[in-house]
Amino acid sequence: MRRVINQIPAKPTNLFLNLLPFLLIILIYTFSSNEMTKENPNQKILPSFEKCATTMHKYIFEPSKRTGEYVLLNDTTSSLKRLVIGVTVSAVIALVFGIVLGMIPYMNSLLSPLVWTFSLIPTMAILPILFIIFGLGELSKIVLIIFGVAPIMIREIYQRVREIPIEQIIKVQTLGANSWQIIVRIIIPQILPRLVDAIRITLGTAWIFLISAEAIASTEGLGYRIFLVRRYLAMDVIIPYVIWITLIAFLMDYLLNKLNYKLFPWFGKE
Image (tube, rainbow, N blue to C red; front, side, top):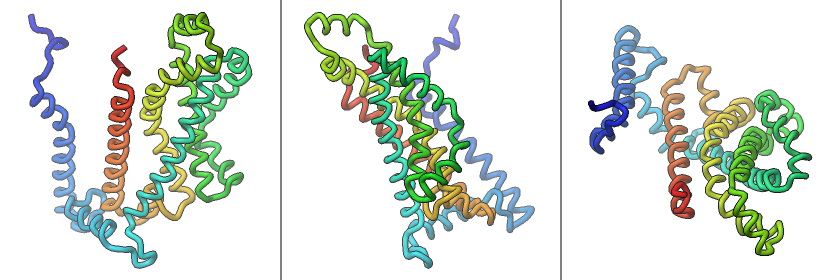
């Protein structure tokens, strides 16, 4: 008897099944857009692909009359700069605190309640506080990403440190290694690929905080543009921007995965 759980699709079938949901979404959107346009040629809720392409052509290839900059390029560059800085700083903080909490009992007793408490605070609730303290410039947006992402990363790295077999720690101590040598030679090499995985896991969360901050206080960025044109119901801008953000996020996740495999080919094969 052939069971469903034991049936593995062939590569062509697997590719087709991967693409099928997206094809269905495109077909449903196209049909709905055509039907709504027939009823109201001026409808803005579901613009046609042609209209979206025409609008985005202006954003990509025509400089803004107000600033002289290419809108999509400028928005993308601004958002990516904030995102990369925020996630990188969060990763460094997570690496340091995750290892310290996982390896030094006294520091665990001192800092873990504080870290766990911070990780439970709704980050968006402190957004006004960050704007008051750091102003409406770049710093407040980056700090929001750090505040929202770093505690999650710290908890993830802490758990991964605790999972390192105690036998390894005992062996190197028997050979005379001190605490610093254990951290540098044993802990960090095993934690770095897990840190990259933690970045991949929290990347979506970082995007949420970035878009939220740009929507409230910014003059450029992908989130700023989406919330700027929403008052005009400009779905021919909003939908392509959402797709563009998704593509960037997918590409970043893909590159991080490839980087992990390239730098740590042993990871996942233990």
